[in-house]
Image 1 (cartoon, helix red, strand yellow):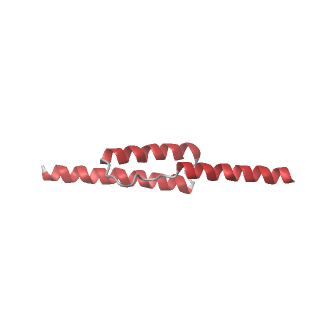
Image 2 (cartoon, one colour):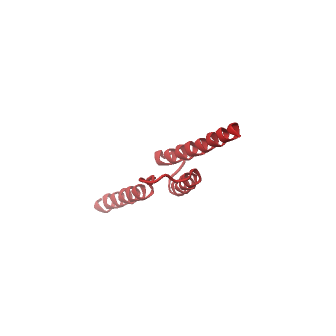
Image 3 (cartoon, rainbow, N blue to C red):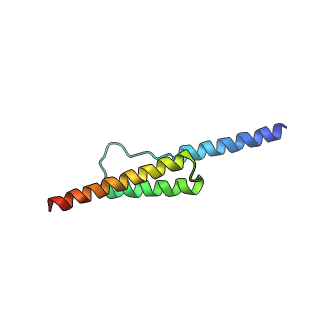
Length: 84
């Protein structure tokens, strides 16, 4: 019985450690070019995707962030096209 509890605890700690390492943290104090934000969002999504399934909340957050960055870049491109 104690071994099973230990195994569950170890598994829980492993998942929690992975979450904290994979959580997306935007860089503060500087403005990055939109392409860099897109690259960071893509890299983060790939990391999350490799560790969690599509139904996991972290997966959904990373996917939403990637879509948000992609749509903001598309909007910026359309604005530039209109101005030209």
